[in-house]
Image 1: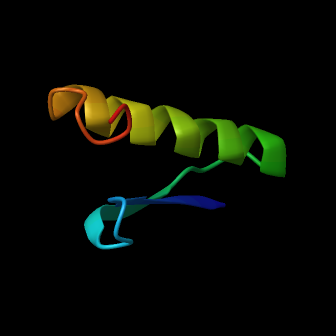
Image 2: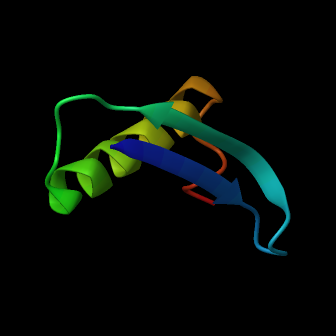
Amino acid sequence: MGVGVVIRDHNGDCLYACSELVPGIMMPETIEAIAIQRALSIDWEDGGQQLMS
């Protein structure tokens, strides 16, 4: 199964997009949690400005 992340600004413009294969995980809820973690991690690495503003 895979996970995809798209971070958009308040205008709907794409700021960042990525996808990643996550082998061995079959539960959609787990994949969704991983996607949220990836988005927060990306935002944190970028200074925490995208998701918190």
